[in-house]
Amino acid sequence: QVQLVESGGGLVQTGGSLRLSCAASGKIFSTYTLGWFRQAPGKEREFVAAISRSGTNTDYSDSVKGRFTISRDNAKNTVYLQMNSLKPEDAAVYYCAAERSIFPQQDRNEYDYWGQGTQVTVSS
Image (tube, rainbow, N blue to C red; front, side):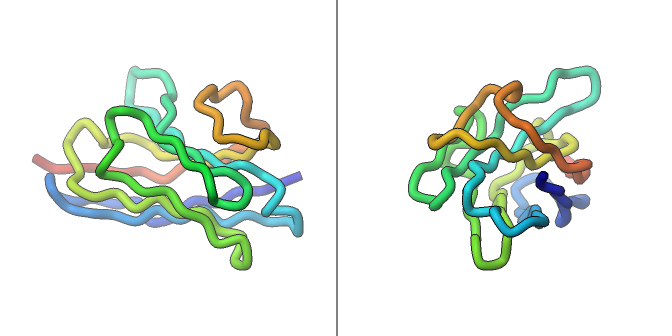
């Protein structure tokens, strides 16, 4: 089993940057593909980015491509989401998640483990 704890959320102005972190428990972190999702009030949880076990393959939603970067450090059992050029529509609770597929997955139903989320607020 994997336990995930997100951090790094907060309040930022439009155009600003934040880096989210997700620390995972367990000794088999490197065997999981990891993803970031977000959920705004009244909306469904949506895919943001995902990264394969080794970090070789990444995938992004069209809405964040070119602005967000996902990365991982398997030695530290941590996955990151660097968010630049933030927009008000990026405001949401951000969740990290883990699953055992070889390649990054966009479907949230593929993910087995979820963190509690971290709030990102973007002021205009």
